[in-house]
Image (cartoon, rainbow, N blue to C red; front, side):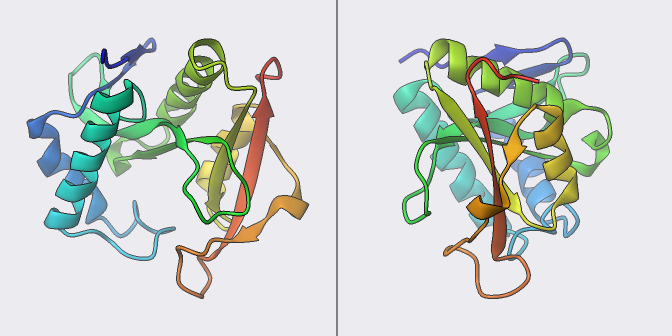
Length: 181
């Protein structure tokens, strides 16, 4: 299977490489990057997630890509599109992103998000794409707004994969093909 690579003006979304593991693990050990997740990840957990992302990309050609800054070749995070996990109160395909702190505030999440939306709508022919975040994650929610996604509070839900606490309540954003902001 050919693995899709997505290019934007400044970013390359690509298959994971062995040399991504150390910056990926460092990123997942950063409490600010993981602020809206239940915990930071250790090296082994990061390696396991990277292996799953690689396998999914190899199997179907798309998923959670490593994000590289084209000008420098430096690793800046992850972005992608993936089927919604089982056990959630909705089905479909979701986009998402997580960036190193040094990449925050540069518009990279929005840029990667647009690339993922275009891929989902134009290549995968998905009629609607979703995005999920912890209710308090204003940075991700702002990206979802910039992408033209809409939020209906009636879709808010408690994520069963998150322990009871302030991170469990989540928001669902939606965008239908042809409505890109």
